[in-house]
Image (tube, rainbow, N blue to C red; front, side):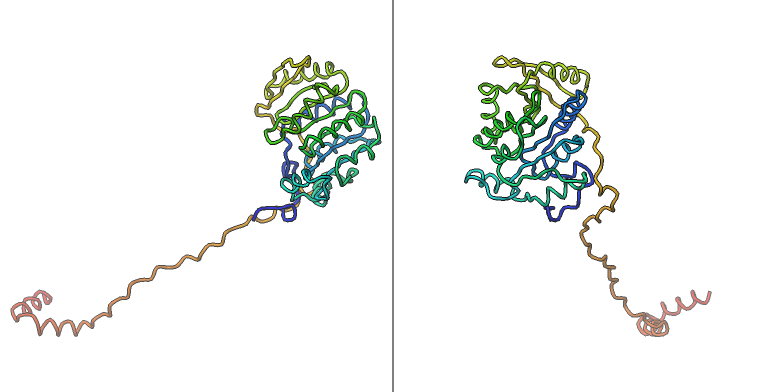
Length: 307
């Protein structure tokens, strides 16, 4: 039986939470957030599209006292239009708010602020210029991503970071168009590209890029390349056997593992021995031999036995 959100055991490690959050992006999230914290930057966190909570759990570890964390997702609720409804039904039918909350609370003591509904509600619920880090991983439709990027522009503090997921996947052209349109026409400055995500800012990207380049050049597990495109310096990063950054285990880490499913085996059958012929009494054997064998042979056998 395939494990579902209802039947899967509680997560023990971050890797046990279903979702798409590659090791390279875990490393970059850590690096950008640690850099902000080291610089004394304070602000809220926002994630649009949470699925089962893997990246939200990761972000929650960087939440400090006095900061807020908001997540937004349909969680199987009503979509704002037919296209979004079809997308949600096809890709996220197993997603429920309960599954997300149970996964999140396996690693944290309290939930973030949860908005259940379309991402268009975020600008009315999150104050402008309040966020230092925004992760957009919701709808893949151009109209929704375009709106999410506009919301991020208004919500981010100066120097804040926005991360756009699936900006170049073959099945998400709407994200690609919205992302590069924002770079070319809406003032978004790319900082770097990972395999799946575009990291950008509406501030000056050069200082953070220089620090990022120094970090990447000092690692043997990170492939680095730099290109120029339409007046922008594009830093491309790719994992070379990179290991995930350390992350504390969940509260379920010390509970006994559920027994592995076993396939019952048939009991081994003992082979049946062939039926034995009944033994013929010795006296009867001698009598038959005396009656059938010639006298000469019978006397020779008796003499041999007596000797």
